[in-house]
Amino acid sequence: MDTRGPETPGGAVLRDAAENLIQELQEHFQALTATLTIRMEEMGHRIEDLQKNVNDLMVQAGIENSIKEQMLKA
Image (cartoon, rainbow, N blue to C red; front, top):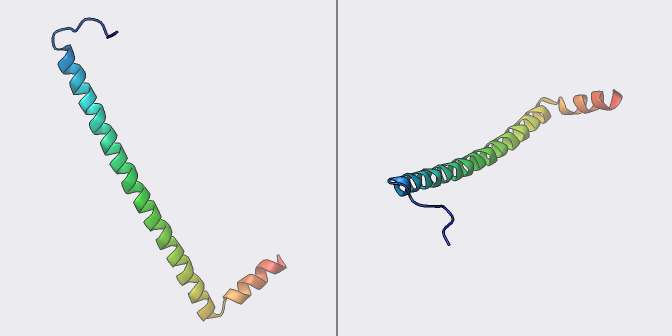
């Protein structure tokens, strides 16, 4: 049984348009969410690479041990 009541002229058209708009918004939101997730993962990998490169440079410069020693003294 349909509990929406009687249809008004143009009501079905308006309802269908609203449903289509909501569906499009949901699809756009899902695509945006997927894109953001991918970009956040990429940024995480870049940060890890940057951290590794900084650590490597610190070892090459011979300052890694002095920083660790300072942290142990504090």
